[in-house]
Image 1 (cartoon, rainbow, N blue to C red):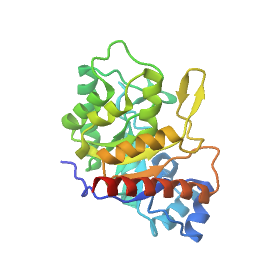
Image 2: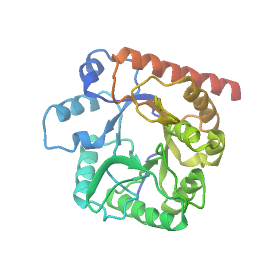
Image 3: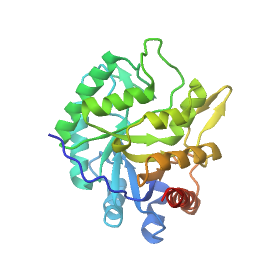
Image 4: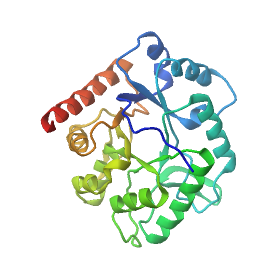
Length: 280
């Protein structure tokens, strides 16, 4: 059976990026933990692993993947899973996460996070695969809701209903991406607060915050901008429903100096603190 660690908060973290390796080691900024992209370190050696080992000595880490393709109809990639498990032994992360999506078909990687149809058939398929991955890793995994720009006519439930059912069926946990909820709510016209209300509180282990851009009538999850006000507003509501959940900010391009991201992180910390005082 997969195991899990107690659901205690790590606090407020950032995604670890090469631009900030030295600053994280030399400055010791107000960052409680780092999230690392698993695939960047599933390598035999070199500079990334050198820094990973040094940063691991000073900060708690979690692993976040982009290639599990848990929703694909292709067979699970056993080589990938072995490398992921090996990295987990080295890093000893608080948890491992990936995305609720599919990333390819017939062995072709689309290099994107494609949404699933929300059907009973898809639920059973993904649940079986999640259980298989968890049994292999010997731990529960977290799955993240992705931003989406298309929907399926076959879907028979809302995304949040699918997430709740998946947690129950597969006994997994959730990485709730607040920016992705907002982006998808605008793109598909649903109520982001209804999404929050439909997600089981006990299953949310981590939250993501990030920025996005607008292209014509769509919002695109680009991770190249500061967190916008609309996402901060939704984060306030998320903290009310999911208090004391580890929160981090993602920035994947147009990366600013570390101090700018730490200032954003301080804002997340202040919002969470204010909300907790209001509900106390």
